[in-house]
Amino acid sequence: MDHIRFDDHDDGHAIAERAGTAFNASRDIAICRLKNHERLGGVIFTNYTTESIAIHSGAWADHWLNRDMLFVVFDYPFNQLGVNRIFGYVPEDNFHAIRFNEKLGFTHVTRVEGMFKGNIACRLMKLERRECRFLKVQARTLQSGYH
Image (cartoon, rainbow, N blue to C red):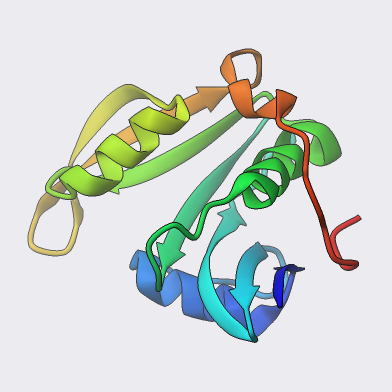
């Protein structure tokens, strides 16, 4: 059985570990796609400011991001929270994550020196609400627990 679990703290900590960041259960939100009770991948949202929010992703399987997950990942911050932009902090040497974010529509904002372990620079990326093509995605099937 394939489903999306919303705001499970264990998922949040697991996704944060995969993403190389931290999860604060009192203020961060996790969204995780599971199949047969096994995590496939997910996102955590951090640093909510009412105008923007940060996103971090982590995966255990290829192809974890299906149509339903895309719907939830972008509907939650843009439509439910009402933010105007999502920010991603990507290590400059993580070419896969940079390409992944670009495919989702994120653009480069700036480069910050020495933000990650080993003095690795950060590529700050953003996705504006008006540029998010996934807000038009219709979920195919969603289990209870999201809305």
